[in-house]
Amino acid sequence: MLMKKLMVALGDRSYPIYIGSGLLNQEQLYTQHIKSKQVIVITNSTIAPLYLDQVLNNLQNFTVETLILPDGEQFKTLDYVTQIFDKLLSCKFSRNATLIALGGGVIGDMGGFCAACYQRGIAFIQIPTSLLAQVDSSVGGKTGVNHPLGKNMIGAFYQPLCVIADADVLNTLDDRQLSAGLAEVIKYGLIRDIEFFEWLEQNIELLLARDKAALAFAIERSCLNKAQIVAEDETETGIRATLNLGHTFGHAIETGTGYGTYLHGEAVSIGTCQAADLSRRKGWLTDADVERIIALFKKANLPVKPPEQLDSDQFLELMAVDKKNIDGNIRLILLTAIGAATLPVGIDALLLEQTLKSYSR
Image 1 (spheres, rainbow, N blue to C red):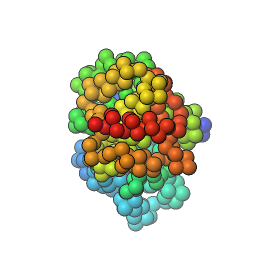
Image 2 (image 1 turned 135 degrees about the vertical axis):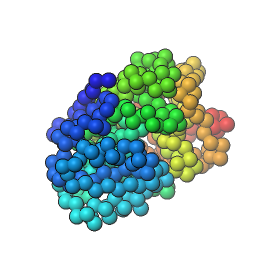
Image 3 (image 1 turned 180 degrees about the vertical axis):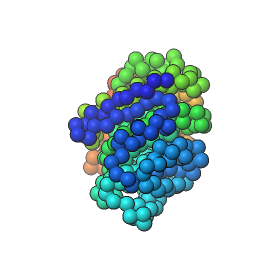
Image 4 (image 1 turned 90 degrees about the horizontal axis):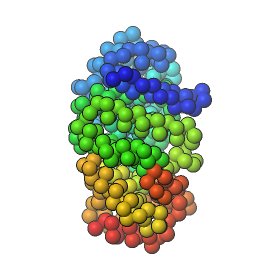
């Protein structure tokens, strides 16, 4: 597979996304972006045995430190961020150092947040190793950690030097994680790219079978959609908010069931189906539209119904802790059609309650 290069156009902070096979072994992709000798690679206990040595082989001319954290959403906390700061300080890393985040969305978010904060900002590189991270969380500069009361409520916008998305690493991704990544892929079709949504309806089985050509196309199309949105609205004051389709519902599920019980993509799948139901109640989607959306998530082997232990009152309480809310009012991304999303809108409480009560059972 030939390497593709997409640019996230942000003026003097623009950066490339490299997409292809065998990229972990291409030394120049790293070295052209690293400006000083000090490099730290942050990864987790699952990824380190698989890919850490490949990355380190490309960094032999640098002074490299590594930190291996436990794997899981439940470890995306300030306590573990402090471990990264401790490592940087104990190794006397300067503000010219470069942090490489090698892992899925958790490592990318934590590594980027640390890079944003350490000495008020050091350079960092994203090497996403899950489908979800390759198509979504590694692109756009959203970094942060979870709080017991809300997901991703502590963080910063901070752009990487580059993103290296090697499709080969998906060969070791388990089936559940692959499906979780497809939730974010489907999202792009729903919010702005109906042709892509239709392609997914026809090709979801190829993606589940890890067909290289299909995966390459899905990654590139997803990254292209996100890069265009981020270039237009970096700090989420407008259109970028549409990337949060299903996320307010989904974050409530993750927080309410305990981080790590549901994978992020699984929670987003359920939340997007709930958002589709609410969009139908607003009169924007038809019954057939909603059935079509649910059918695609099911074909991707994703859950479409919320956990029974969360009742409507718990959902509302958890959804109240969301970055899109204003003055305590819940604001959601909804769909006016398949391929068209609205910016955050205030929601009729009765319609929301109807969705939470009827769809969750």
